[in-house]
Length: 212
Image 1 (cartoon, rainbow, N blue to C red):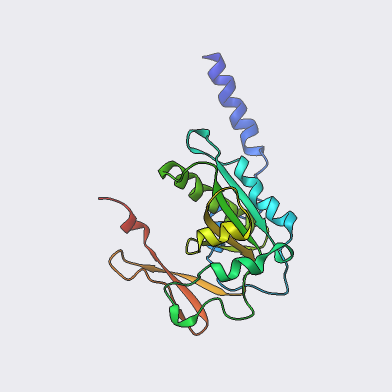
Image 2 (cartoon, one colour):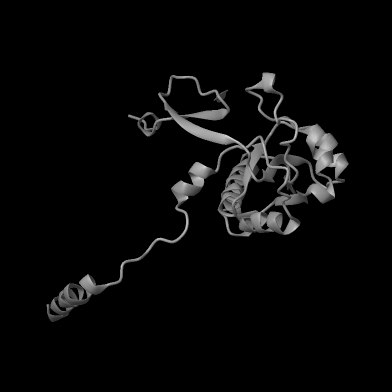
C-alpha cells in the first residue's frame, strides 16, 4: 500500500513537470500523403547512386516472410543506363491517350527489384513491403517515385545482364506533378484522371473499408 501511495505521489508531483515531447519531422500520415505515384520528373535533378543506396538501405530493417530476405536490387542512374530502361517500361496505363511520361519529364533513376528464388505469394508480400518502404524513404529524402509493373522482363534482364528475373521496377526522381487524393464511395470509379493539370487519385473512404 505504501508503495502504491509513493508511486501515486511521484506521478502527481513530477508528472505535471514532465517536459512535453515535441514531434520532429514528418509523421507516417505525412509521408503516406506525399508518397504519390509520380509519372513526371524534373530533369534538372539527377538522382545519385548514393541516394539510391540510402533508399534500398531500408530493406535490411523491414519485415520479411520467414525472414527469407531473397530480394535483390539493381541500381540504375542517369550515368549507368537509365536510357536502356525507358523503352522497356509503360507508365499511366489508365491514361493511354496522354502517352506518359511527357517528353522532358522522364525518370532517370531506377531500382530494379529481383528475387533469388522463384516468385511466390511470400515473395510478392516481401516485394510489396519493400517497395512501399523504399518509396517512403524516398519521400523522406525529398524525392518521389513510381512502382512499375508493366515492363518487358526478359529484355530488361538482358539489358543489364541480371542474374535473376526482375519482378518490379521503381522509378525515382524529383516529382514535377501536382497530385491530389479525392475521397469516393466504394462503388464509384477507382480510375485516376487528370483535369486542369492536376492528377486526381480516387481513394475509398475509411468507413467503406471496414467490414460490417
